[in-house]
Length: 291
Length: 235
Ligand SMILES: Nc1ncnc2c1ncn2[C@@H]1O[C@H](COP(=O)(O)OP(=O)(O)OP(=O)(O)O)[C@@H](O)[C@H]1O
Ligand SMILES: [Mg+2]
Image (tube, rainbow over all chains, first blue to last red; front, top):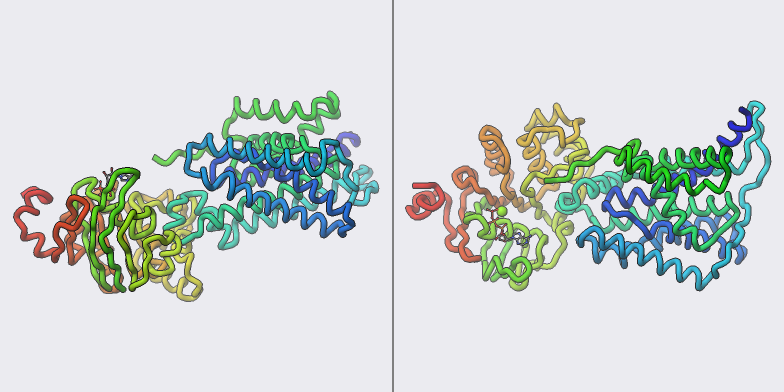
């Protein structure tokens, strides 16, 4: 029992990482109804940027912050180059251009940093924390805390500020938002930027947790974000968060019962399962198409 | 306020809808756009509000060319459209919808006062201020859509098909509201299928044909015109 509780904290930590990654992905979906295939690649690059800055001797906190900002910046560029020109085209087209942007990012990252798996410095001091006879890792707790702070702050930003309200308007009716004087393009760019920022925070924590940074993280992160967002209800902020947590717990359960080789299989199984049984996800509501 | 449209050509793809249209709107003008289905009434409104790019011609607002400006940038100048089909933000509350109407304003106290005034005028909006706008009836949503547009304190309000999908009783109420805007001094351009109702709340009527202005006269004079009565009022 104690073992399972200890593992629970690992599950929560990895789950909160997925939640951060899934949020960026889901935010874009919620506003534009686009599957953002570039998201995973953007945040993979962000993790490499963090690694690079650390190697240059930049203070760790600053390096992480700058890397998150680089994620925001790259996401904004992707929006400008790969999405905006085709925003009003058939929705398959932006997905393809997103995938294209992802491949370009992946190739560029490989050119700069090479194809090898790199290890990532442990920025969070590791020591056991005992709570009520259960040994938890300090790393898991810090990851969980960082994620919760970021998620709560973003939620406040999106639900309580004037800008957040404007983003909800864009989401509910882009044309009407424009008619009210809301600068729709600025809102969309900001949403991409927020998604890139949160996503890179997630990918850096991911890199620390697994002690690895690699090019294929791009595809892997997109898959995880997709699974988490599907599970929680795609396009829903809360859904992405809880979907990420549940995915982390499910994977951890799979690892301790059947072995770590099944970790990634679980996310795939969840995508398939949710699509079959509850297409709107756990927290999702099917949004009626405007007639 | 003056809005001048000069020799406007606009359309969709290869199709030219407005072909050399000119007209002028001054402060306090209340104008009905009259024309058959597809005559280009909505197209004029979309051209003024920057939702389509005209091919040639000019639109000037107080002398300043606005022909190529973005829709959202026209709102702070005072040009606001109430779109056909209302398009309130369905999952925002009534009050949030009103606030978003004032998105381009910065004067907090003025906004609060205008919201209070809106509630005084429409007790139903006050009662449902915390309800999601999408849960209200069509007529209530239309009231909200107009009230939301007015929250930006426009100088020119363009209203497209406000009667769309409303019961006759609701249509009465919406037009009563539009008629009541006379005292506020805001200029109004109304494109409305229900010509009889439209002419009751406007003073001037601009009849379109072949993508240009066919006649421009007082609503009262147009109502005396035999040919107009035959084609639009059925005798
Ligand atoms: N987005 C569009 N793309 C292509 N053609 C369009 C578009 N919108 C309108 N049209 C065409 O342009 C013409 C003028 O349309 P418009 O909507 O301005 O007419 P209207 O006078 O408002 O008519 P109604 O009384 O039906 O509202 C119509 O023939 C219409 O089919
Ligand atoms: Mg029309």
